[in-house]
Image 1 (cartoon, helix red, strand yellow):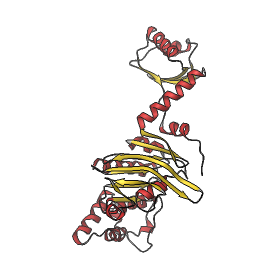
Image 2 (tube, helix red, strand yellow):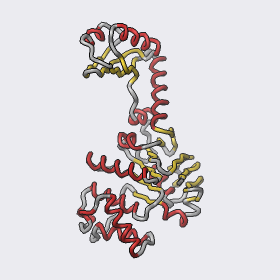
Image 3 (cartoon, one colour):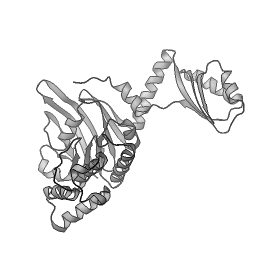
Image 4 (cartoon, helix red, strand yellow):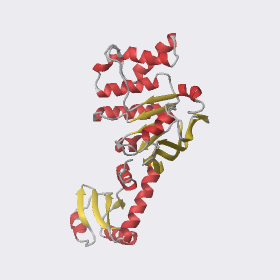
Length: 321
């Protein structure tokens, strides 16, 4: 199984430290998200992993082989899609993919088959003879993905692949990425569209000012941040937003909720309710008991889950280098 490790990575440019002691790892079949503001060090880390830059200290390895010291051995196992890649004005889609297949040493029938497979997977068949410069943004992103895939790499590095895409193209790109993971590829993807990453990633690393501030599964990071925020709200005597679901309708729902003095900001959508109440768990438990005692068939009663965007805003300060 493919194992990717970033181990205590540093990268300095003169007096500027772009990457500071960054470590994380992921394996084949996983989509690993890399999150951070512009200038946080994401692209620098990805370039070192792709063998396109050298670290000041630390290393990146693919199945134990360094992408720095053993670059020639691991380069063919890596596919890199940068956030901005060059196009050639007089090349068609088929010629463009064929060019990069040749660059990776594929020849003859093997090269033809590789290009055909990529065209099919990225759904570029109707565009084979179109000039690259005539493609829409969404189709250019698919072509960039195809270029990164043409040599069938084990590790795929995607730097802002959804940038500038419309909603349909983003959905289609997410589907392609998940399919690639199911096929056994290890995938590192950065994006500012956190809702997309939350949907497709198995784990993430959040980076700011070159340092990782959190890493783990999306679920674990969200739970950790949520617990901290609820503890802070409780200690400050503040309130939290609670989501309530009912197993069946209640004719007097609005009246029951209105008669609870500790409840505010009630929104009712059929059997789904959001409300604001005390952050203290004992007070919330007492409220739940009263609602059940008044005949509400409560099937869910919990503080609203934080999104990955909420987590990002809590863990970072928006600072840039």
